[in-house]
Length: 199
Ligand code: MN3
Image (cartoon, rainbow, N blue to C red; front, side, top):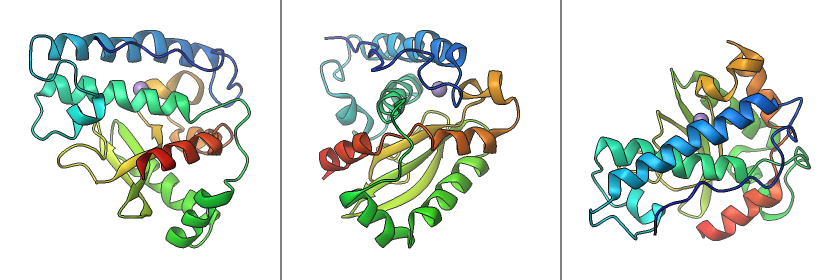
């Protein structure tokens, strides 16, 4: 069973003005679709075929094709899922408590996460991860993620794409403005679902 490009739970213009419709459409139908088809091509006929994407990515040494395209498939699936036009509120419940425990406050978490995203040199991602019963922030280059060997460890429950294709049409070189805007569309209920799945 080949991996399939997931549908979004909202329209391409639903996250405006924070993320523009044209960026969303190109990002989903070109970039994510490309990672998905290239992942399928990279695993076809290998013993990775039929495994879950989590098992593939955490399974040790990966070829460049599987690492880059499997990471791209997984990372974007999480990214679309944790954003919503109804997002932007502060986290509540267990996620909020775990953020306070790990970072001191939600504001301090935002600062640390934003710094990780802003200072990731070149293309990559910043993450909020569940690891050893706690939360932590890290960043990874390219389409790497915390599940992979040599990644920063744990299971990502929130991620931001800081490749230029994620923001350049609307924000040009102003990555920090895009990172600020991202918090207006984060759906913390979905982050809570990912936390519960990670446990
Ligand atoms: Mn991307």
